[in-house]
Length: 208
Picture 1 (cartoon, rainbow, N blue to C red):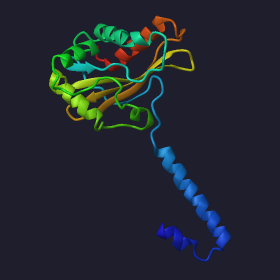
Picture 2: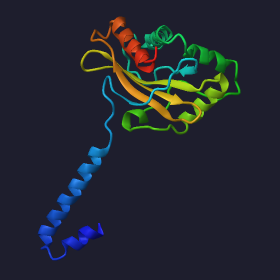
Picture 3: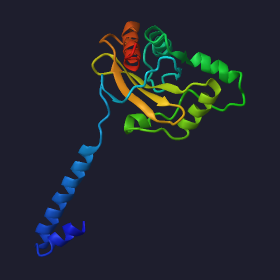
Picture 4: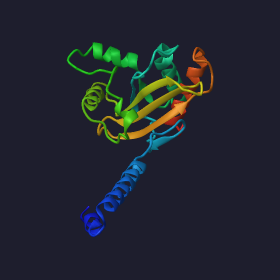
């Protein structure tokens, strides 16, 4: 900024103000352009680990908005993950609920978690309170990774879209974050939802 001020000396006041304004606009525009935009359908950030042989938590879909068949979303995702990734030791929401019911001393939640930040910024490492909940679940279940289905919605193109993250429970590092979209179909069609959960499963398990 000092160099800019030095360069402005000797320039008439009005012209100097205009030039300074233009320079600041350029700097601001460059800063905005350098921020990574969120992935679109079929895009992802990060590097997927090989989940085969690992114990992985699968949380319920966190953000959903009164969609038809949204109550089926967790069951459809569980079916897709079991089918595509039989070599993974999945721990699904009913399993987690049962473990928490038998462990009243463990204070952790798997629903209504603060995941909105994933939709606003690039998250490389999660913090508390989300990390605290997941760490306690990791201790309870022995899982090393967690699939967080951040959001389920019916998109403008007429297809179900799922935004999800894969998080290391020991470090809080977000290994993978992506968006998948199912086949075009009516919101009332359970097959449209199933196609989205299957694509998420295949995105998370490229190794088979």
